[in-house]
Length: 490
Image 1 (tube, rainbow, N blue to C red):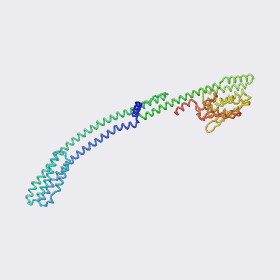
Image 2 (spheres, rainbow, N blue to C red; image 1 turned 90 degrees about the vertical axis):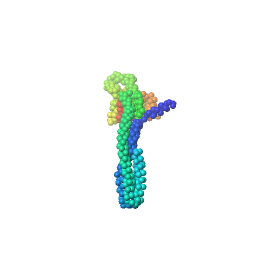
Image 3 (cartoon, rainbow, N blue to C red; image 1 turned 135 degrees about the vertical axis):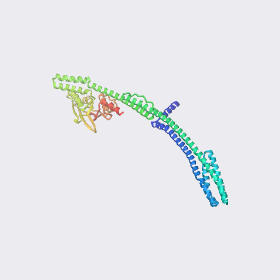
Image 4 (cartoon, rainbow, N blue to C red; image 1 turned 45 degrees about the horizontal axis):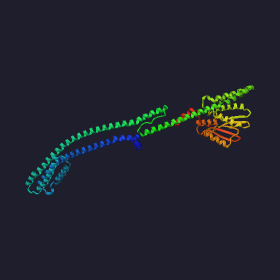
């Protein structure tokens, strides 16, 4: 049991919908692709930040180098010449220079330039001392001498250091540019390789997916062709797709149902064929034929030529309509002529005790009816109804139309049936247990041709009359169309 459950789990994990397989394929390709794009973006952002930092340092240093010495030297010269107070010293120039150098110190990566920035910060500190010393000196010559010796010398050094700083930064920037170019080329090559690998994986998985879908579909198409050729015994298609599996199971179930339906239809047709043969045999039973021929001989011996002609003609019409040219569905007019010929033969034989009347409206004669429907009912009315009554027997055949259906009745004034006999007849007829072969066959044939709602119904009053009613639809198909219609329904 454990092994079986494990096998079922393995099968269920393999069974997936086509949509799930497509989503899985997209996930296998798209997720790595997004990761690759994200990594490239991070790499490019890193390159850009590194390059931008170096470029910004070079620009700041260049701007500082262009303004600092000139502004500070000029400001200090005015201070010496005009002998301004300590508060009017260019402290802002030095403070801005220190702030700029501190910023450079935080972003500079070159070790030499880091030393230069540190040295320039010390020089700015010394500048502040020198500026304060000049402000505290009264003699003009001493102040001028300190300006040239201290201030100009330090600003020259700062300018030289800044120049060297810019030179190294530009050199590093050029080197960084080459490195970035190399890294970009490497990233592009890596991207192309990974993309090619992803495309290869996608193609391989796509082909596998297409094969998983089209291969069982091809088998299903072959099954359909075999089914169309009449082979209803088809084997299941091996597939891991839930949709194709459901389609194949539905197809197999349909094939089984159609095969069962056709087998049932064949059995019904065989039963119908046997019933028709039995009806024909009943029509050509020796007693009826012998009695009819004896009646013709008796009429000939009495020189009743007209009676001989009439009875022989009726017998000919009777057998010709029984065969009906091989047709199973005939117009009601032909069925009427057939039963009339039968009644004329019987009336000739029982002229003193039998009368009949056929009253079927003209508008019903063009509709169709299974052949050999009315004659067995008339025969049953004569031999089981009027013949057992010690009086003149009467048989009436009538018809009418109601709610789109056709009703044909065979009425006789025979001995009738008791309620129990009528109930037993109805029960026996509809459960195929009644011993009257003609009634059973007529009823079965009507249901086969017309449907379960149609067939025979009985009414009777004991000692007075019996009526058998045939219910027919207006559109009856020949038996050759019944299998085709039921197959299309299936």
